[in-house]
Length: 553
Ligand code: DGJ
Image (tube, rainbow, N blue to C red):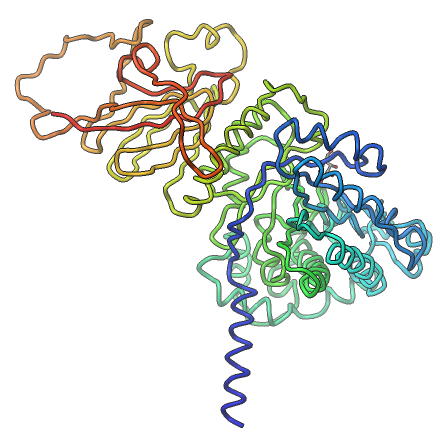
């Protein structure tokens, strides 16, 4: 009997470890784009758009699934659009991430079917502080949950039966959930819930994970006495930020139910996306309580079947936002970013710097399918690099680069090398740098293959390699790229006696086949590497360089 109990305990520990361990998704490498909200609502649009996406170089498309069209009458389901999307994706060599536009889309319940919307007594709305009902289904209603979960479950079952070629690689549950207009739901049911104690599971989690908690949560908990029990206001204080924590817990336990259901049917990665609390907005002024960085611990604790939380990026501060989501317990995936010419460069950065799972500009069908479109050029290069990205992801041997007119350069200390990396326009000879136009971003990714061997890919960058002991040369250069000061500062002792210098042994522009074999496109030397001084990829060009270094004294 004892033996049996021990076995059950061990198995349950293992299962919970499997749920809680950070999954790494080695197969996922999403060069994506998300369709505009209404672009998958007719078979004709799907047929028209998908071939363009292949021409644009995507390997994956993010496609909404609309609850209102899936279940127009309660209990009767229509998955013809889902079927069409899978068929077209297969025809045009795309994978799919489906987005479940269920009970909430950008906090609102606009995609709920008409029968749900009209029956507000059965499916109640959230209320603001003043008692005003908003078109946000109440997360506290079991009827809302059951109706949403039932439809979602039918959808996942449809996939399990019909996606025979595994075209669907991931699912997003709901879209940018969160309370709007007030920091929490003030309906009667919500008020009752708010008076209850903070769930013991959450307080246990906070105590267990003290060292890795988001500082926002840790501070709020400590400031109010690091309590091990109590109501939401007792534990975290009485303010709108506590309201947001409370709502986050409830959105997360709701979504956990859908995620758990999906996992029993299909073993696809599952994620949720967040509208960011950018521009200094306060809870209630954006979809509050969504999977935001400062609420990640609430979400991780309440929704262990959600594999990661993902940011939608429409505001300034790209590097900072992605850093907040690339965490030891959260893989970085960018399901939405504003469609613009800098996106191609940013894709390099997130794969190189943060081992991202994927990148996906929003309303992708509005982009151009010209082969010169920046995103297409970038995806073309990234696709070639896939074997290397798969091999080196999470190894610490990839780095990302991203520069603009304000952040022009950086010095990277990396193992035995110092690398000075900069925007291409820092070179003195490109007139586009000074013609008054805003610099396009420059960036890329670097992979260290061996001690003296790198792959550098991207656009608009220049890199100079030094040995670690060698002082990086930061001197001002003239128009021709030579140091201005010449031999003015003669020194008597020889500082170089013990220091080996780093030189470029060879620089090749290469292409890479699907097995990771490199073919030289051209040898770059002379003017193309400033006679062996640096490697560079011009603004507007997207390339892969294979760089070999050597040391000399
Ligand atoms: C973020 C949402 O997730 C998208 O569905 C879309 O509404 C964009 N914002 C803005 O167009």
